Image (tube, rainbow, N blue to C red; front, side):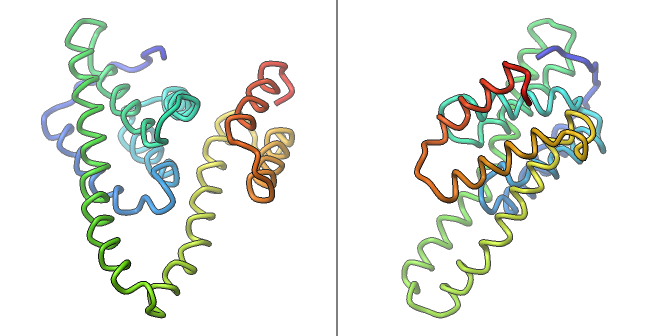
Length: 199
C-alpha cells in the first residue's frame, strides 16, 4: 500500500484515535466490519488520515487473509502510523503504535461488555427479553453489513452504473444465505471475476 499522505500527528491525535476506537467498539454488532462506514467517515473524510485507496485496500487485504475479520482495524491503524513518517524506522514505529492503539481500543470495551453480557444472558436465557433482544438485533446487523457493502462498492465509481458489482454482491448474499458453500470459494470466485475484468 503506497503512502499517499504525510501527517503530523500530535499525542492528542493518537489519544483521539484510541478513544474513537473505544467508542466504536461498542457499536460493532455483527462484527467489526459492520462499523467500517463510520471508520471511513472518521479516518478518511473527517480527519484525512487515510486515503480512500488505503482504507479499501486495508479491508481487502485483511478480509482475504486467514484469521478474524477484525484484522482490518490493525491495518487501518498501521497505515495511519505509516502516513506520519517519511519512510524511516520512525514510520514503522508509528505504524506499530497505530495498529496497537486501534486494536486495543477496538477490543477492550467490546470484550469486557461481551464477557459480562454473555454471563448474564446465559443465566437468563429463558427470559422473553433475552429472546426478543436476539431477534431484534438481526435487522440491525443486516443493515450495518449492507452499509459496509455500499461504502466499499461506491469507491469503484458510480454505484448506479456498476451493475455487475452489485449483481455479484446480490448473488453472493443469496448463496451465503441459502447454501452451505464455504466463504473462501465465494472469495476465490469474486477474485477470479475481478482478475478477468468482469467486475
